[in-house]
Length: 165
Image (cartoon, rainbow, N blue to C red; front, side):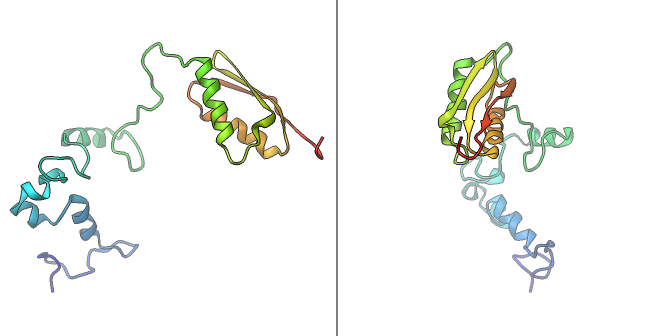
């Protein structure tokens, strides 16, 4: 018996993981093709979401998706390039904001006891000093500093306490 009006047998279009690809495509598009053709205004038209909304289909300009796909830009699940981290021309994040962001992140991290860590920031260069009880905390503090926007260099001078000293 054909599945949803198609000419294939049930389970015929399955991937290695055993999932029904046609069903997944239909759900992603916001419904079955024949419903969309008969009632485009109620199923959201081509873009899904109902009455001209974007729904879960992405960009309302299909040319954008084609452009980025042809250009080979982006990666993974992302169809367009990421401009994250590229601020306006001449913008430099202030040392005070870097300091506050880094201190907040160190405070919020479950794996770092930041009570004896001191943070200094000068022209985007971060210096970490103080003491921690484990070597992993020292390196985790440096990893956290690397993730803060605006950090240029990191000087990790944190010392590891030996036997509680």
